[in-house]
Image: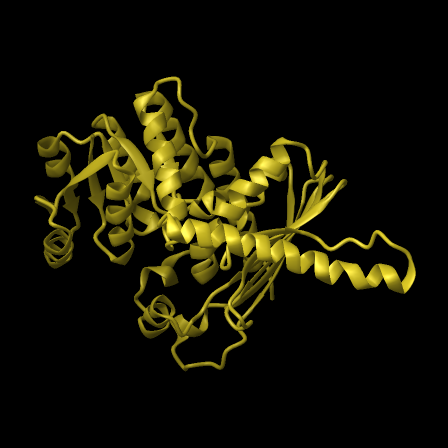
Length: 357
């Protein structure tokens, strides 16, 4: 059993504790936060013995194998560096770092200290994400031509209300504000298919009415972007106003295309008309209904196996990360090159937003 500590005792830390325990691979022995009340509320609810307000003290006293970092991204580099230099592997909450340069520094530190580092890009490990990986590995889609990704954000939800109601919330300090906090979820799905030599074009704006608070009103809530590497394109849509709140990806290949709905946990091949004329237009709807029905049956089986809860993909990711920690020859579940490319794309998108009038 790995001895695991968590830095940052906010809301997301609950999910980390639950899924660490669910893997059966580790035990959360300590938590740390600069705010003592945050430490106590998490430790009491989750029955965690080690309680610290100083990271150095936790690292010195708890003999940790892995540190989970669940703090705002502007603190990730110093925390990760301190943990890895103390001999710990690091699992990072997204965003991985504030900038691509800081991300590179974290990855360099991991290599220099022989430690593993990964990040909570959990949606790549959702059931449809895993099925997509299998299709790509088998060559079923052919070369990728285009990706279309859609991520909805509910500003009336718990987290959205916290951001909107508190001008001092750390999201407002991010260079890309709201988008900076969610772009990882969007870009992590497309970076395996986009090369390092890419260009970005964006359109960002605020659609909601002004509140009169300059800090809150400075935050756009709608983003469109296009990424192009000379061979593959990707469109991105982040919307706080579109309903239903969507989380989807379409992958267009030379042989076939698929559509993934991460909220419903479905993957279906795009409709295809194989018969001529009006007769051919009758069949695709029935074919698609059968495909969705098969997805429904699979999801019902996963529900029966207790594999359908919200953080199930995080459990899969953590299990693979801990496997890599335990095996010197193991493979990181998320390649470092992909982590760095996500951060470079975020930098490029934020910079292009900043150039808009």
